[in-house]
Image (tube, rainbow, N blue to C red; front, top):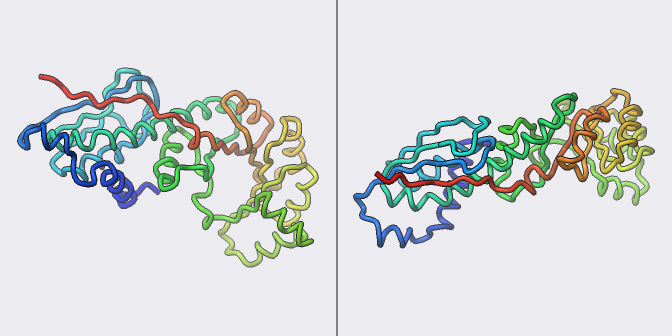
Length: 283
């Protein structure tokens, strides 16, 4: 998902937003011939993500700027670690600084938070997955960060899979349409490669959904006891996903119910930016 064209499009738009008519401060104060060397420094420990994105902010501002990455995406780092070194024309370094930091701090924050969730369920067979609760326009960046933290991506967009949620089922019920028949009809029209998932919020909905032959069933906002019952009721006939209100405090117990996947919206909608700084070297 995180292709160079995607990176350049998003980062280019951010740079244009930040300096639509140039960087007035740098152009007025800094000589065009001046050069600078700066370190991307971790103010706290974490997991790195966004190296290509960080570098693109400088490359698109001035191709003469060089960015040497000291760690790879997915690497853990300690407080005080130098994560990258930036060198080149000083005006360009100063102009791109904030945009580069904004992206890499956000992506490292997501990767670090994801790694915390993954560690909590490492003793089980459950995988941690993201959701579509991403920042509009930044989904590829944020989902890349989830993978760097050891998590997995859910469907990328509405176009990638059939996922019938509570509101879809409510519309079917309002029209008096059988859920099983509706799902079977959809599956019959779909390519054989397309995955079908259905969300339920009660145990008594499970059998009708499974009867259609779907691939994944999502147990939404179930109690721990009902999650265990749901896993038993599904009995291996579909992948079981748990979702709804998952936190670092609850994810371990959810994983221990035997579910296969735990989707966590908080990975992207509630991750804080990691504290990183770009420090100019004074020599």
